[in-house]
Length: 375
Image 1 (cartoon, rainbow, N blue to C red):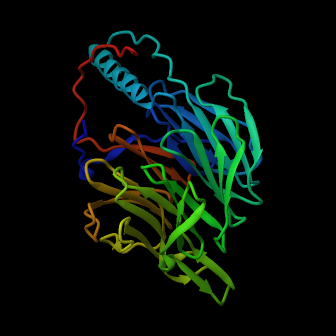
Image 2 (cartoon, rainbow, N blue to C red):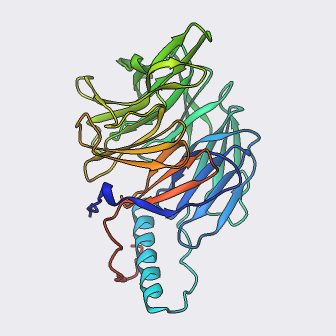
């Protein structure tokens, strides 16, 4: 069931102040945990049911790429829904809260600034790296998992996109063709294609079976060369497919006037996957900064977060070109993630917070459903 969210009622649920500025965040496929990549080189796992924070130590540089493989994501989401309702009921009745149900198992794959991919047991009490792969020469900018959970895609500063076995980390394919840092990668929901976007604003559509480029999408509006600082700024800073695969959203910065200070305006390019035509989605209010995250809510909203001197979260209805609602966040938003059941979003903040927001118009009814049984 798709929740009836209310962007205007979106509010902070958990502020989650951590030990260092946060550069990336992702909900796991069950929605129980929020994982945050920090500038102290750690990953922090926040249990949203118990409040426990667990560090993942093993990287020696910043981590932004986070992705997950879960054997039974649907069952895991149902289990979390049961737990949330149980906790709400017990809180209202002031009953003693027993321990939460054990989390459903899953694997976390994370990528860092030194080009490493690390596999982890995502629910371990004392997490330790299971496997480490030297994946790229330079920063692993993003990591994604195929719809069937069998393949990992990574991209980075060495201009390449690579595929890996999710089971054992063995290399499968390397895609070359980008001429600049590759910032983002995403699997099409049908599992046959892959999209990747780079610093120059080139988005490539890859045929996974053939390993060839089908076409390029033009997102060059996201890039500018600043002759004063002799540097490129911009790039495809976030990327997401709609659930049905008909749209591809890319986020970034445009109208740049100062590359050093990052002065420009956030923008979402919404590509029609069939014909490649793009619609520009802009915030209704003037804001200087970059759109660092984007996602599709199943109720028909496109949500993005961005950063400059402050942070912002924007909501667009469908492909309407102007946002309908804006949330001001005290600190620059460097990433955004939506949880699987569509009730929450989270942002990674430069002030060391991983803020979780609820999008529901009011508190859920405290009704405990029947316990979930695995067939």
